[in-house]
Amino acid sequence: MTPNLVYIVLVGVLFAAGVVLLLERSLTRILVGVILLGHGANVLILSGGRAGGPPIVGTVADEEMSDPLPQAMILTAIVITLAVTAFLLALAYRSRDITGHDEVQDDAEDRRIVVLAERDDVQIGDDQDQDQDQDSPAVRA
Image (cartoon, rainbow, N blue to C red; front, side, top):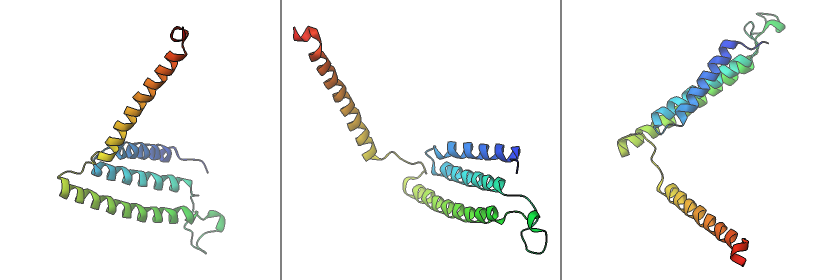
């Protein structure tokens, strides 16, 4: 089977747009990103299957039947995407009720860890500078 260029471009566009939207802070945009990624995955699975007649015994010869596995996988992926969409919609609705908007806030604990890590980097850098100064010939003399 030769890959269809339209499917390849469509999968690329859907994945690229989905990833860009997933990196946003708004839950609504994250939701749209998940939906686009789900549709991109469905098109990718669809492009992998063999085209042909309907996979019903007795309607066409076995060699001319399409592969039913990608279709079954796409149906499963649609259900999973629907469940994730419903969950994210509930999160966005609840966030809007509590905070008045649906943007994901920075976690206070994460900010504290970043400050501590930056402080450790500065101290480690100062300690390394002092070690290098002590090892230099000018300090030994």
